[in-house]
Amino acid sequence: MVKGIQARDGNHRIVPSVFHPGATQKIATGAATAALTKGDLVRVVCDADSHIVFGTGSPSAAVTDIFMPGSHVEYFEITKASEKIAVLGGNMYVTVMGVDG
Image 1 (cartoon, helix red, strand yellow):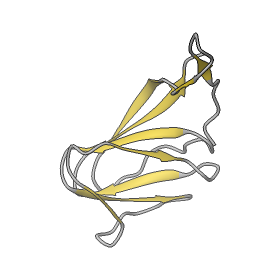
Image 2 (spheres, rainbow, N blue to C red; image 1 turned 90 degrees about the vertical axis):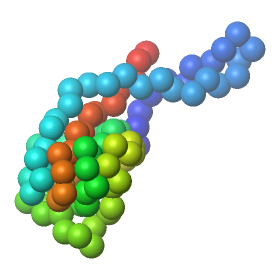
Image 3 (cartoon, rainbow, N blue to C red; image 1 turned 30 degrees about the horizontal axis):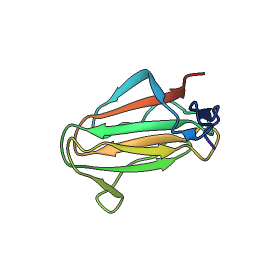
């Protein structure tokens, strides 16, 4: 689970969390990210239509895995310790998002 502080406005209503970008990993087709931390929220975008897969060890994406249209941004939560994301099709950019506060 992504951990953060629930901000409130002057009327004590909850304001959506604002995430700031951390370092970005550029991953070439056929490769995988470095190990990510359980609970991280990651922003993923590919520069061409691609397929991605999550796994530990040495994951390898196949055409039957999650389809990511080129230039389409998705956010995912890392649910396992040392999980990685592998890509097939284009370059993938993975940014760990943090919470200000």
